Amino acid sequence: MQLPKQAQLLRIFIGESDKHDGKPLYEAIVLKAREMHMAGATVLRGGLGFGHSSHLHTSKILRLSDDLPLIVEIIDNPDRIGEFLPVLDGMMNSGLVTLENVQVLQYGTEPVT
Image (cartoon, rainbow, N blue to C red; front, side, top):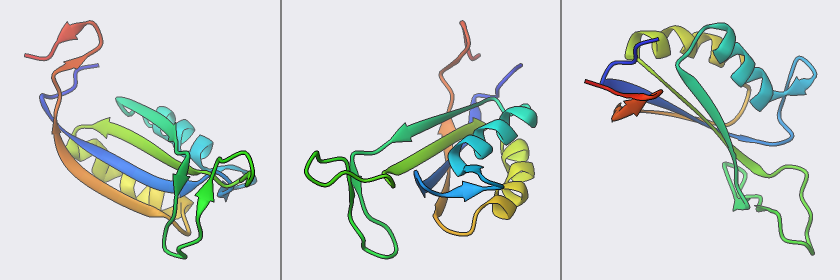
């Protein structure tokens, strides 16, 4: 798969306990992105965070949380990201979604030219 030098980064902020059709939302998002042949997706777990409710989510040992903050990042060309956004909207009922233009320096084993 070729990825253009100018691409977009879709960043999705959710909680670890968020669900879609009975499975973890982060997993459902990544699997759907893979099914739609997106260029790549990564899930990052945060150790501390808060969102709209201002409720603090932390991994500190004295205050174990089963709802740690997660970030799902998906990178692809703008058209493919645009096709994914309505699908994502149907999967989410809370969270934060951001979009930014990025410059791809390398994808796979060959530098992007």
